[in-house]
Image (cartoon, rainbow, N blue to C red; front, side):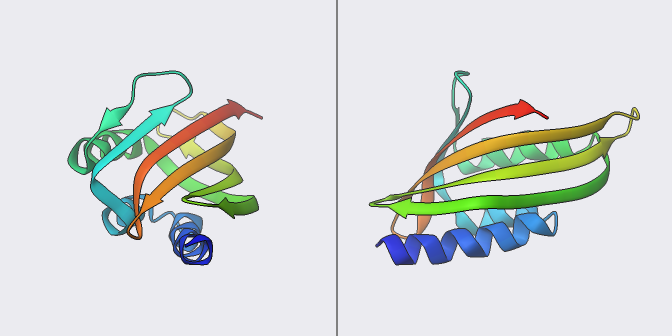
Length: 119
């Protein structure tokens, strides 16, 4: 299970590195996925999570990078550290570091939690 989840994570990270956030969500998220950022309430359901991401991406003028630095797996979980960098339409240059812990079931992401901060 761990190696399958790690393979799937690497496929997702390849999409994210190219800015394919929506494609990654459509490909790897289970229909009943839940996404939680920090201690905020989780967004639930693939459609809601994709709609939220689409709205976020509307404010992005230039995608610069999404780079995973450390990757690991254990049981039904994978985790990684990453740096995301982009410019917004209002001129802000954002560099965000994050740790992502993902729970997999039957090859799909059923829960993902983000811990992040600005660089």
